Image (tube, rainbow, N blue to C red):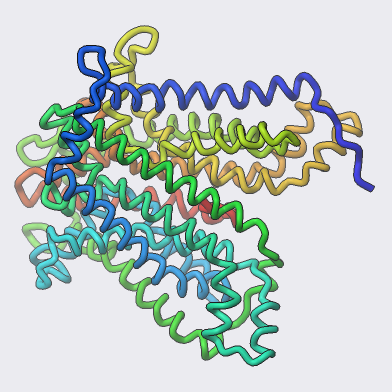
Length: 554
């Protein structure tokens, strides 16, 4: 018997309003305000609206070329990631074999590596003397594409795989019994059911690739720039705020459209018939050979840049050794750095902990509110809008946010220019969407009748929250903490703007070492990249131990 629907107590309503107000205030002050201020500086001249800059900037041949290059490389990377990711998702989430968990971890590892580390790894692989140095790919568009695919194929594998692993296979079996071949079963039965997840994954890959910053800056420099790197150059080198604003608005429009597309795809996915993932998986068959071959080849290719990075970090001017790692305790050749790499690593860890705490508190409160299922259509739409607003920092230029911080948070009551909390806040903004996306699917999966039954039995709102929601979501919260920590540890875009010279983070130090002449400094950059990657991998390995099936489902 279904328990009667209980009207929310005043305390519950107050908690929901507070849970929505705090995240909205955080995003409003530390995201919307800086971004709007940055955009406004380009569109308002002497206090009056002037849209002439929009036409002027978009008519520049360089701007059009960069927009075309950004869209083209993001679309191409999304297509390649889907083509490679589908067979891998089948092998890693529909089949059952020994070593599957380790292979999953290897495939997902590149996505969580700091972008600067990925850029350094590919330069090591492709530059003269590297394993593929003879191909002449260093500094080319192909190198950027390879790095983007390396970085994002895990998004397709994870998003499509988690949708595929629990899919009821009886429809495919029925089609085969009726005489349909493997190709017809795939195109008429399996693919339509996976289409929402594929569209969602492709849109997210496009989003990440179109806003790529660290990888493009390290591998392409200014020759193969994107909208993101162009915003960086216009603001830091040419002080062209109008041009940067136009590009930020263009990027924002694309991001909003993609988020709407992804949200629509997620909505269609809930109609799928699902079964226990353990029951849906099976042993590999002969027909799985091509998919297994693709998976193994891609896994080897994914491992190559990391292996090359580690091996190159052990090469010094005197031969093989740990000299590059011993140099991490110094400030580099000709005092290239203000602090040692170990001090920078300590800064990164401290800031990442602070950012994680902020993102977790804000993200958990937001997820608890969004997971509610009000009867009113207007409230449901309001919650959907609230959810979408929290996703915006994922795709808006981190450079825009960082520069917006500097021009808005410079006067009371938010004069934070010299405050050490500025970088943790910026990193928390980047991690916030991932925290919400990790926790929210678990919360929405809780049967609302469970809360109502607890209330009927006399439990107050606080006890219902503690004994039902928080008890069920405890493990995903731990997983989200590790994920947010890893993301904050490797964040480079906004941090490159905001970190103080005497308190740099490790990604900032690595980028500085790459840009300085001298083999010793580059060797230090390689060793520092290995250290940063090792710390990140350790965190993600812990997260994987706490894995929940919906993690990474954007």
